[in-house]
Amino acid sequence: MLYTYNKLIRDNIVKIMEDKGCKVTYEILDDERYGEELDKKLKEEVNEYLSDYSVEEMADIMEVIYAILEYRGMSMEEVEKARIKKRDRKGAFKNKVFLKEVEED
Image (cartoon, rainbow, N blue to C red; front, side, top):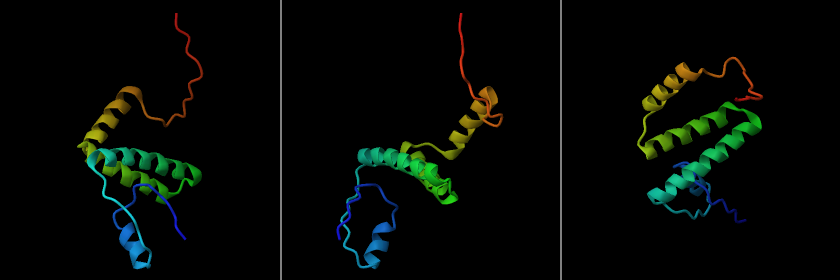
């Protein structure tokens, strides 16, 4: 049976499938397409996490985030500094505040 995926996969999946006797067709993406596919993968993994809130799905999100950071030339330290700076200025989400309306003069 033929299954079509057309999506970015983890590095070892091709070997795992071939070791199971599957015939696998794949390509190595150029940098531009890789960036586009990383963005799609992030959406895919977030949607999977939202369907069951599992630790495994959160780990998948983090793996994609690390790949995006490397691709975009960012570091986790930069992101963490920006997160803390924003948290210090605007707060976190601990107080469960839900904004309903704002009326301006």
